[in-house]
Length: 123
Image (cartoon, rainbow, N blue to C red):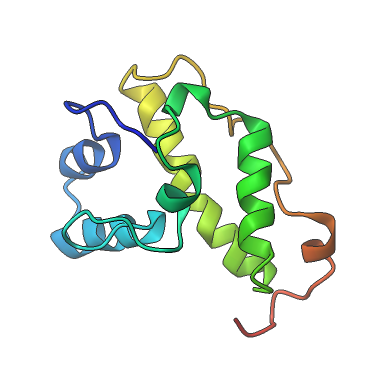
């Protein structure tokens, strides 16, 4: 996801909320960045690439959920992969980078075949 050079909503929000450095590192890893900010092979940043935040819509979020689920991971793992993306989009709205959150109101982003798996499956 391409963020404006001056605006990194996840980092700025984390600082405002007083989150510890290791928590910020966990968030960074959750969206697919290493400690130095380099893109990892997996994660939302690798999936969305240089897509502008404003160009991400509900269809894109469903595609990302399907992409994660295609790795044959549990429903819970897929849900956890989506959580930081949804949070980042929410923070972008709070910081007035986006006017609306494309994940707001989306109740079920998990693909149908993933929903049949039990939450207790190992990843």
